[in-house]
Length: 162
Image (cartoon, rainbow, N blue to C red):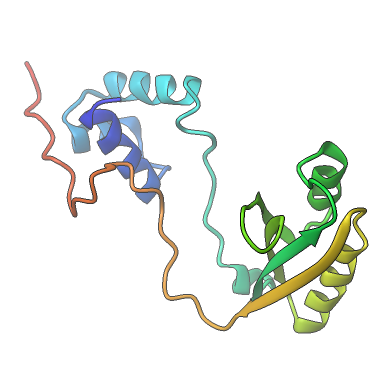
C-alpha cells in the first residue's frame, strides 16, 4: 500500500459516494486508475464494506452503553457469537484481555430497553456477570488513521501525468 492508496482510503472515509472522477482528481489519478486501485483494495480486504453513517438518536437508538461481559469459559466460540449476533441492539462485540471476556457495545431506545438487553446478554450460556457503562455524551468517533504516521495531513497528490 502506497501513499496514493492511503489518500484514496482517506477520501473514501470522508465520502464513499464520490464518483471515481472526483476521487481520482483528489489524489492525482484518472477516474479509471482510481477505480482500479479501489477495486484492488476491496479484493485485498483493506476496504471491507461501504456503508452509511446513521445518527443513532435520529432512528430511535439514542442510548449507548459498553458492557463488560464476564464468563466462566472462553467466549469466542460459534454459539456465543451467534447468540450475540442474534441481538440487534448489540452493534459491536470484542474478545478482550482484562477484567472481562468480552466488550459489547449496545444501542437501545431507552434505559428500560437497555435493562432488557442486559437480561438477554446475561442469559447467554457461559455468561457469569456484566458491568455496564452508560455513555452520556460522545465527544467524537474517529475513522481509522490510514496514514499510520500520526501526521495531520496526507501528502499532496502528485501532478497528473499527461
